Image 1 (cartoon, helix red, strand yellow):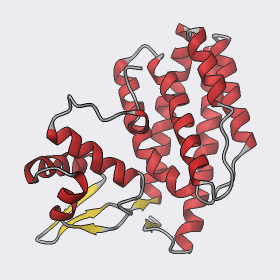
Image 2 (cartoon, helix red, strand yellow):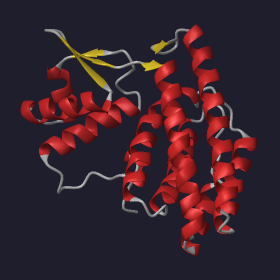
Image 3 (tube, one colour):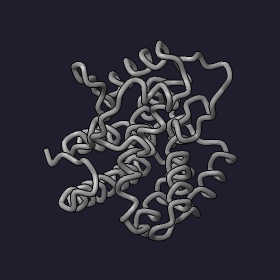
Image 4 (tube, helix red, strand yellow):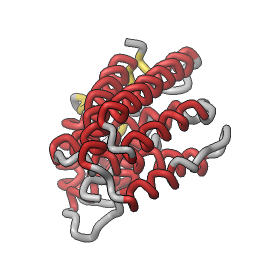
Length: 237
């Protein structure tokens, strides 16, 4: 695939020192190794990234543009917390993008190899408290969406979807820890696959709209619950 979510990307030797530092710190933020709301210093991030001061400084500039890090005057950096408003906005943005991508992918048609791979990905589930299973489910779900994005025929749209999915992954890693696997959500993804396979743009858009709306509701409900338990740095605004 031309556009890959960070969870599916590998560290390529061709990346610059800044690129490697950026990718390493970003993964640690997304995977919650650097917790939402945490305060960190540049020296800590240099150590974590295994890079020099300059590449880490440049990486932090990019991460600030991504909305993942905030510079604090004379006191380092803060990993930005997850907020309900930010998450609602992200989910709504994702829905707008992915609904259109699903319709375009259905209109253009997906190769049988992609359809078969998507069917395979739908078989991945997870159990409560199974971190390895959650990781596998996340990889499968984001790959499923990435295949659709890459088959929409619009590079700008595909790139925007992948960036949104990278942001969404951090939220999903928070919510899936205590959110049981949903068979109804799996059925909705199956409907998306069926519509794309049938080359029915209207049905694909409707199915993706339903799926992303359900996902948003599940995510927001879970964030509200977790915030009330003070389990994560989640701002109820």
